[in-house]
Length: 102
Figure (tube, rainbow, N blue to C red):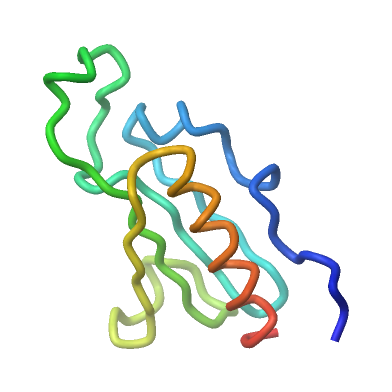
């Protein structure tokens, strides 16, 4: 097995993208994934102290179908802190899982 990363933090959208309440969809080999702020809402222009609690919800599944066409029972979710550190943790988890799903 190679030590080369399949998914790195730099491959994912900048953190501010998720503040706009937009999900990011990607793939690596047979693995498909979605990253989104939970709750999914635009908070970019809301002062940080008024945004409420949030997390990053990362969902993975095996392709070839997209998120909406794949049954929930075939998806795996993992939650991370809604922060740059959480984004790095999500990238590390996705990279690990990409090696397992192929």
